[in-house]
Length: 61
Image (cartoon, rainbow, N blue to C red; front, side):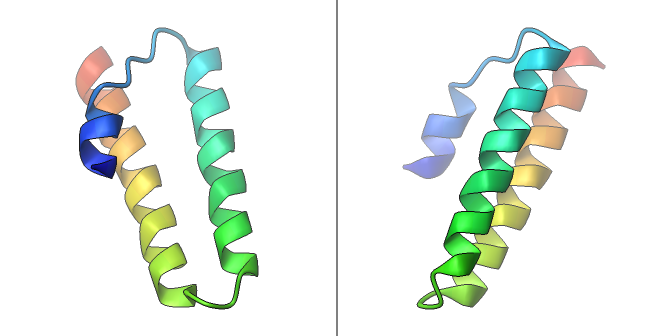
């Protein structure tokens, strides 16, 4: 479900990309603070950053 949601994202500008990256960073930090799922949160944060970078680079060539 998460990947299908992310695949619908469209990023039109550098500013919008930075906002998304900031949101992912804040989300990742929040997850890391909850000690219940440390491995999952790190994996999810890594996935989000990798996905966003790949998406942006493939969109703008």
